[in-house]
Image (cartoon, rainbow, N blue to C red; front, top):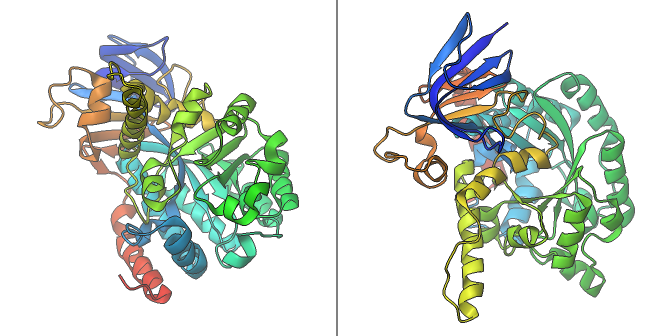
Length: 451
């Protein structure tokens, strides 16, 4: 039995029954957290010294397109419905070869692990079954826990988007699941729906029925920008034909323009919302849905979205998302002629949205998201002896406000150490780097982008 003890750290479990413990230990056996306490011992255990470290659950990114990693730095001045749709979905994604999917996903996963994210929903546009297979190979080779989401192919935007009448490639999805995902403990399947915003009603329903039949998470881009109302006009009715199909196995990405009534209905049905605040604020999606979800009694989750645009660091998203929501809530108070006397969303709230709420949205709350005996050991250790993080009077505030990826010293996924002493341990970080760069250059050159 493989044993590891993380010793003498400040344990921020985010489990109310465990709490936050000073100078505490975490005992791991075969990838499972078996005990959290003080003075723990175990024979033949690897010891990881956590003195001057915060020990916390790994972050969960509930929505990201990791295959775009090798085209970083091209979308920083793009809007959603003009440049992004034209250049990315209408051009670049069609140029991807299977090895481009692999290299983008591999280094996207490395960025996740390096920055403390141990689980991600990778929303993918595989042009063929082989593209999907190589995207999954990347997740396996990196050692990231992930929900691989098979979305519409990226080779023909007119066919797969707008008012598409073509269903997702069911045979490819089933083959990929059977061959690559079913027996992998770190991977699960998601199916990327277009929903009534981007396909006809019959297809919107049948794609969700496919996901439900396969026991897969259904994740949908919906309610962003003015696209739906500009196409459907006054006939646009939010979830439309999917209104009565929502449930805990449905995750909605963005949802900026849903009414409070629509959001309430989704929350009551158990559906989750992924807000990607930094990209949404730039590209014209609209105001993040987080406030409406909170008002409805739910809790949003955070995601990065397009890493061709922004950093894959989840710390940035939980900080930006929280502060934006505080700004709107504060402004409402001020406009009512009163002074702001307390903030509306706390540092613990936003950290939970980046961990346990993300896990819940992906159907993984029984496995990850808190440091709890019986859950898998997806753990981050963050240094507090750095001149930027010390003194750490409040460990949660240190994580949210004072730290950045340079302070993430050690990362474990399923009990395996994937980062130690600030460095990823996987040799592919160096071995595949040149091919990763070449892939990005080729895609941008073939796309004819002028940067």
